[in-house]
Image (tube, rainbow over all chains, first blue to last red; front, side):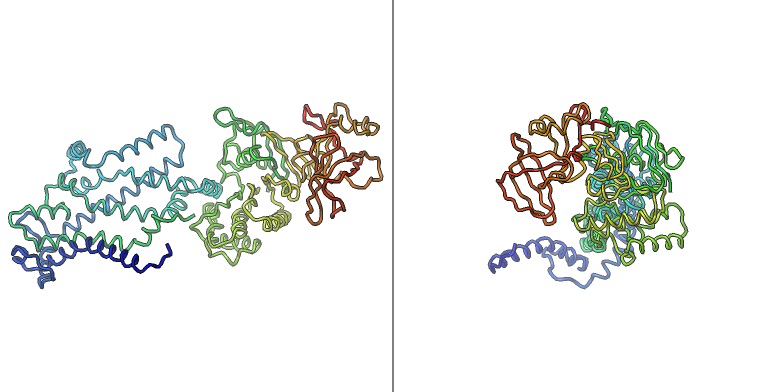
Length: 280
Length: 351
């Protein structure tokens, strides 16, 4: 819209600033809280300005953690979360790329049946199938392991569906040209299809990474060994203590929020491109 | 380089739809053959069968002496130029040209040499490091040709390569394709629905209709002696006028018409064979009212309604004759310019 009405402009900015403040305020509080001395947060009034204990709080959380509450050092939990999120992301991407490739480019019996089968699993999120999945993982003795943390979450109907939709917009002639140029199916996939879907891959990478990072219920269920605690569930452990150490917990919260932010920062350009434009 | 032989080639899609109903055709080494026909006549399907992109239901396809029915496109030693170019959008022009060679295990310096030669020939050497989307339509077309050229294949297959270009570029590229093919002497099979493109490019034309060959011949043979009413109507623009023989008899020209072949009941006359001045040889005369006058510079098209007939008829004359709409004019048709047909069989009579 090309309009110039000072009042409307002012009002629009007011709304936007209000919205931003609403979103940023809790984050600000978390950062402020993480810099206070141990007793400060229990005095009833919430401090609005950063304290001076930031460095020691973060150091304590990073290297020693809250062992009394049964939470290992945050550094270790962050690493666990990272490994789990990466395994889920990469696993989801490779499986869904390959299955979308199969569904779009190969004519085999029951092709549509398999497609719908995959599609139907969209309706079954982790929470719904959590008991049987737990049973399977337990029977395979994958409790307390990275495999158990990531493999059950790898299958992704959403990503398969999105890649299928994208592959179907790639002109048929591209495949034919590649065939004439002597590229077999896998070569076509690697040399043509993957580079063409790079922006989609980046966008899904971001979404899947955050999905994996934020997993809470599943890690809580299958890990009993603190060595495999992830940060998101670790925070929950810390808060269930009798006297929660809020200044340290807030430090852990800020640390837990950082990796997704970094992923978005670094992949933002590709991410936006992948959601808005198709390169053809 | 090689000949291409099609023997009884058939394509049946599931549901018993016959797209190609048995084609016999021998394309000689170095020949430029154009497949032409209206949309849905099976010309593209036939080309894609030769390329190996469509399976062959029945019949034999040979490239050189080798039967290639069941070979992958890459193993047939052919190169194809697609209608929408099908360039790889994420690769530079150089890599677009080099991709097929890389897959065939050529050495780096061989690839370099071939790409440079082809690029020079097509005048795209300046764009080798660009991506396809940075090129204009004509340049993309050249890259698509280059991709076929570098391979030095036994045959080029063109699938309506010019139909995405604007009219001016199309003429220019048409000339270039022709010159290139003359120079390289590579066997070429070219599909188009544009009869002018077909006439100007081909050493031989194959006119297809409904999955069958209507006529094969040099462009001028087909123009001068169309074998069926379909070919007569399809080749030549504006299309040939078809007049019932009875009508011409009724116009008092009977004396000239009784030596037409037996079974003739319809007569074709090219728009340029209807003259405003009587020719020197024997002629017929028809009266007509001028309905619409289209002046097109070097030539004019006169849309007329013949006397005692509802039949719309087109006449082409050079320049702009001094007539105006509504006039009743006399037209003269040389006896030799008549194309006799039988309307029931659709074929030319007397062959």
